[in-house]
Amino acid sequence: MRERSGAVLSKWRGLVSEQQLSGLSVAAFCRERGLCAPHMFSWKKRLREAEAGRFLEAQVFDAVGPAHSQSARGAAIEIRLGRSRSLVVEPGFDAVHLRAVLAVLESYS
Image 1: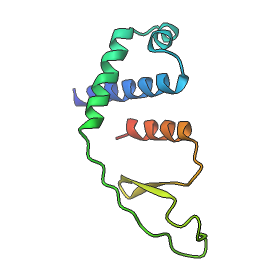
Image 2 (image 1 turned 90 degrees about the vertical axis):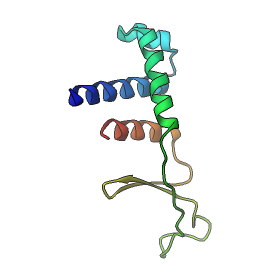
Image 3 (image 1 turned 120 degrees about the vertical axis):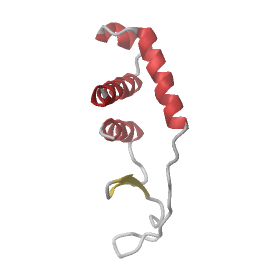
């Protein structure tokens, strides 16, 4: 039963992320996909409330080594994802692309 609920959660996380990245309204997105708009609104709310209750640890480290210039030092952000994985976000990143990557990573957690 737990696997099924995890699959459902993953499915809706993905759909909510796709809808947000699509630029379409919830109604238009659901019409295109044959989804029930009230379910989409309900899942968006559930996921938003679940995210609001989560604590994410953030640590700031000084960049070291010759590969980092003085101006870029400390400007990058490292996001630790667990299981010894991390994501480094450099200045000038594409926010839409980052959201998509994070949505994919969230669907596996």
